[in-house]
Amino acid sequence: MNNNVIYKVLVAITLLAFTHSVGFASTSSHKTRSAQLITGAEQYVASQINTSADAHLNISTADIDQRVNLPICPTPIVYSVNADSLQQSNIAVKALCQQTNWYMYLMVNVKQMQPVVVISNAVSPGTILNQSNIKLVDMNRALLRRTTFSTLDDVLGARIKRRVRPGQPITPNNLCFVCKGDTIVINASNPMMQVKATGVAMQDGNIGDTISVTNSRSKKQINARVASTSEVVVNI
Image 1: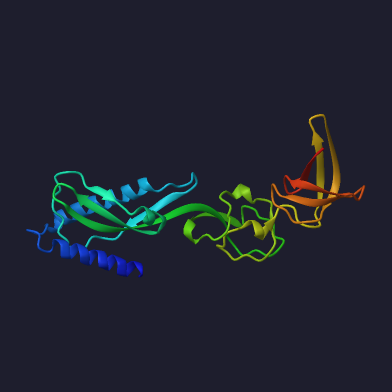
Image 2 (image 1 turned 135 degrees about the vertical axis):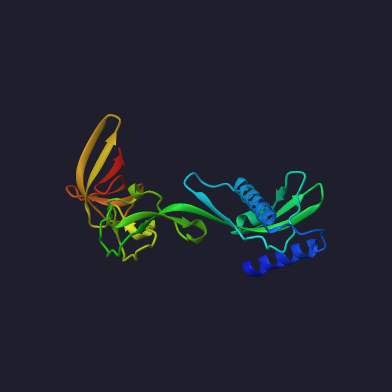
């Protein structure tokens, strides 16, 4: 059952429940009470959903049919939802006036938005990411199928490995900070000493990845952690 059908069913249930109520609200009072119910439902839903520090909620509610009687409630409206529905994008919220046992359902749409780094113009494999070809946009978390980046600094200096369309989110498998064949600095250190050498990356890697590198002088192959676009580190 799609969202439009669900909403129509809820409206039908509400109309059946209140068609025989005494006296329909005037247009002005309907607008006022409708706005109050919608605001209350949205605030209630927002209070029930946990979001990460870098995300925010985009909440909207379908208008209440003007044929629905919205009587005055002497006590504060009590809102409730099925806990499982909080994981969905469309949430049926029950608004109840406990003193009169009046109630209705409102359909609240929720999108969890988060910042995502996307390509701002078409790039070819090997392109270095900079301020001119990337940007930060808010995207619906439900539409993201892979890991993404939330700040521009997360990807600046990295190279794209395959063609990416404008507006497409950048994912870890789309780029490499150190790419196979790159000449890099191998920084080997411990609390007592530090040794640097030139090497060649034998694998692609992103910041924090452990990759295989070859020491250009000794030809010895070792595993090292990617620290930047030009350096890998080894603990000795």
